[in-house]
Length: 76
Image (tube, rainbow, N blue to C red; front, side, top):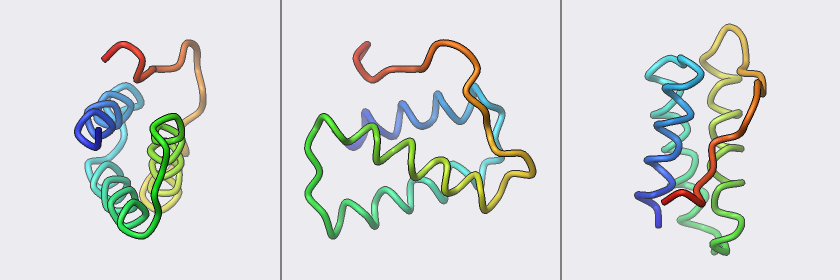
């Protein structure tokens, strides 16, 4: 399921035109969090998007804003 989450994070990353470092930091945060906590499948996307926002706070000049329909893991 991690690969599905990473694919989804990549789509979010591309959609919001973020820096490459933001994606790598987000993946690092997800991996580190999942190494110490067990997360239900339902909350996995929440972990991913939270990691992306934390990474964006470190790397991006402007944090991404929600603009329209959210991307969903349901389509996988």
